[in-house]
Image: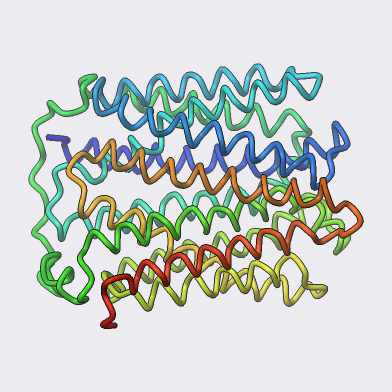
Length: 400
């Protein structure tokens, strides 16, 4: 079993990973705009390519980690990401930057499913709730801080800063990993005594009986909803530079004003961790999806800075519940944590690819309509809503 020390250390690895990956990926689009003149079309296409690579690579990453060991996969992933970013700081043209992003994405595919699996492995249902709650708060909080501070980092360190600082953090992860002194197969440490399980609330088996739907249906619904949430998020992130231009914001102020939804997502993770009444209740997933779709459109089309901030609060809370649902049901119902984590992350990759791809295609074929990407992605989100509702009531007319 994995020791408690190893699990606690994985939260530190996770926080560093979230800060480094969010900083690089979010501000890469500012870099591409300022260095190579990328518009929304170019940035959306770049994001779509990254999502496609991640969708494929992370599926194999989860299986690779399950077969060859969690810590070996992490060492390999952190090494690839650090090396790619060090090379990326020297990239002088668009094709090289694309190659660097693809290599970095492949490395990242060996990290997230493993970190999810480590915190979930060999946990009782009650302990699993606690561990996933901490996991979600750590990565979401670190990602929010990276977006908030990233603009200032970009202005202070310059264009290479978004490559070199994340690379340094990935190298720090390698040092921490070595300090944990864990066998390569990631499963041979004697476990430290775990704290007593929580005695309040329902057990996992009782929660699964809250609804007339079989638990596996909730897993399927969440696996469908989460990619659509990532469709929305990643149709938004590449166009943040243009949103910043709309309100005359430099990179630093863009980081301040456009990171609100990430902090709202972290806040929702905290609330959902402390209150588990949403487990196996369809209406919470439905309301979250509807709020996510509606406020996505408001963020992209709104003309007021106050409205931009307010809409992000609802959007962040909604995508938080959707993500939490996918991860919780994956780990609650899955025995092979690495593989299920890989599938969960692969679905995320599908969303990272599909949203920007639809946005880019809409701008390519309808360049005369500046906000066409928002309407095209919005239509895609409506399709996802219809799919979820249809699946919910298929051969199951009763509602809870």
